[in-house]
Amino acid sequence: MTAGMKQSLIVAAIGLLYWSAFTIASGAQEPWDGRYYWSAVYPLSMVLSAALGSIFRKHAWITGISLTLAQWPVMAINTGIGPLSLFAVAFLGVLSLPAILSAWVAS
View 1 (cartoon, rainbow, N blue to C red):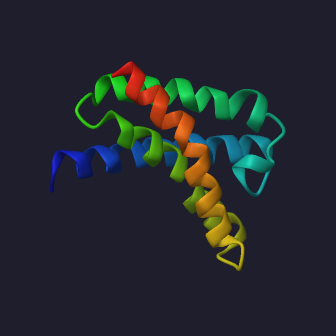
View 2 (cartoon, rainbow, N blue to C red):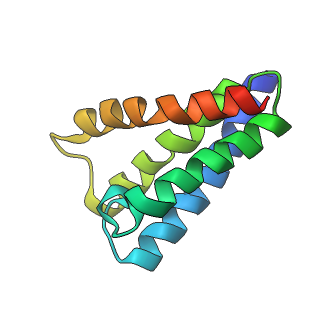
């Protein structure tokens, strides 16, 4: 297993915990349906991406992708996999761009 793969798994696990905790606390089925997602939780994930990017400097950009895409399994567990799942992954890909940038800048 390469260093980048290990890093992705570590960050994905952190992301699963982060997004699961928010989803449970907010009572939402999907993280982005939570009341404070756009005003606090998503922006805080940029800070978390930067922090993880400063730890995993070699492949910092991977932290932004892994952390943001970790929302998808949380959604899949809570709502199932349906016809909008592909859209959700694409949307999370777009949402990961600021996280990639923050992780890269912090590295």
